[in-house]
Length: 254
Image (spheres, rainbow, N blue to C red):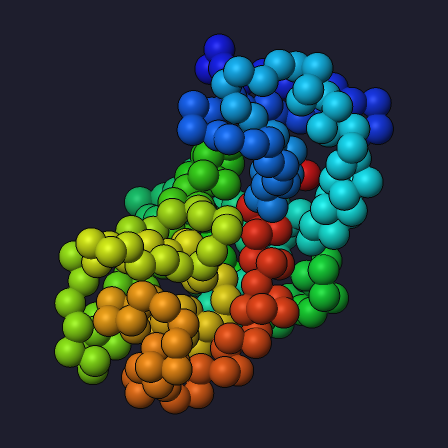
């Protein structure tokens, strides 16, 4: 841990607070990571521990509500159920591979007696992760990120061609504050967790960010561009607003 970062223990919280001193920070800000479940307090470099502790105390009720509102964590473990492109899959960590086996993939599409703990829905297929079990979670995450990049790139290229727009670079990360972004230098960034959402949701976010290549705003002209390349965007937009937060629960720390 950086010498500018430290943990504060508060008796009213089950988790320690990670305090980060930032050079450019002008005020204190609190947030809760939806994936790591960490409480993070960012403060100006000149601010001391006593001030940080007092700030946490003033916002203790807000922090408790934020933690209580987090979706139930679903770590990547054998037997767990996760969505892939909107369809529920049971994870199967199969151990060392044989010469005939490689990688990770869907190995069956039958109904399993496995349920999503958050919704009670049954899985419709299985994802088999081969190799040493202690590395299965990491290998699954890497595979999901790779698949997300492939799917997102394909849809971005489709919408960019349709709208006659060009982008410079495309990145896929585990960003938690937004599902996608477009910078002024035409760099597009997306959350890899979109691969967990229904296909039309990923498609909508791709269309949304491509439209920003021309309109860096949310004006009527912007939404007209989105509708031009993805006419039925409203349903996907509502899904993301109402259910998007649940995507952060998969692979999250308990």
